[in-house]
Length: 379
Ligand code: V47
Image 1 (tube, helix red, strand yellow):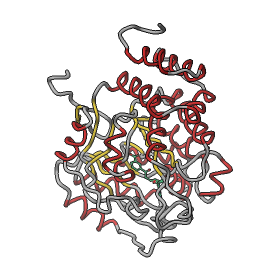
Image 2: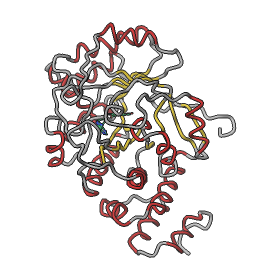
Image 3: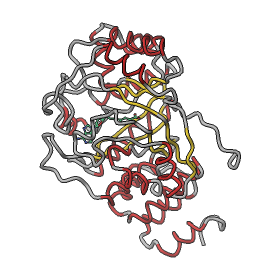
Image 4: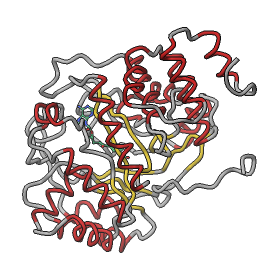
């Protein structure tokens, strides 16, 4: 028998997996070794779901034990008026019947009304043609002046690219200034799919893959951590997915600045790709599992429940996921406008805990930067 006797996964690998390529990959993962892009591709094309789940579970446990994290958070989407026209987007004013642009006072009013238990404010939206870094910096400052305890995860790399260039700054100076205004971390949006040809087709007006990666790298070097996403389940192939994961893994090797990777399932209502059927649940779980296995240097894999629905998010906890994002309190429209099940996403803390314990994991409340206290039973 191969491997360590205490780990039943080695025995399963030995007795149930006959394809030599899958066996080799399985052994590598169980031994804690990194897999190659070719092996990642084999997992997508040859790997059966139970096998992928078993390997992803091994990596998840190694990194996070039985913890499943969540946060009390709230989103602010300042505008849906956008300079870009991405084919998958149901949110921007180009494709939606509604159009909004909250001014500073309206945003501050929302912040003032926030429950004091909320720990993170996630601010992201469209790339408004007239708003620059000074506007968005002032916004952060004002929010911090009334709620200094709120952690601000704000502005995707695509928004940052536009606002920083508009002000004539370089990325280092722009991000340094935003940090001084109160920026704590950067959300993972705008990554979509890095392959240049595909990116040109589905979101050609948007910041390039190289720019997205450069902004995150610059942020990490300035001590601003971030998340990464990938939009999957549209016209991409397994090769495109692995290429995307490989670029993220390489960047994380250099900086260690990413907190979580979030696979974002393409939802097909009300956008220019509505003719594409949404992928199956099996495909979703494979995506989570391969991400967990491949991104061996990412601490967390997140299932963003407003995008996939709470049932699927719960199941994902057995396919490498250790984080379910937050309580949200009906503050985001990106996914409801694209046809997600939860048209008004709200999760109470007790519902979140129930979801997590129902999957035999231990719910751990975290802050925006993954600081948390373990319960006495686990510490
Ligand atoms: O970049 C837009 C995606 C992203 C659709 O960092 C769509 O914690 C599927 O990045 N179907 C924005 N996806 C949201 C985002 C995010 C969400 C939650 C948490 C974090 C985090 C980041 O939403 C966009 C795009 O990839 N998106 N339209 C659609 N029809």
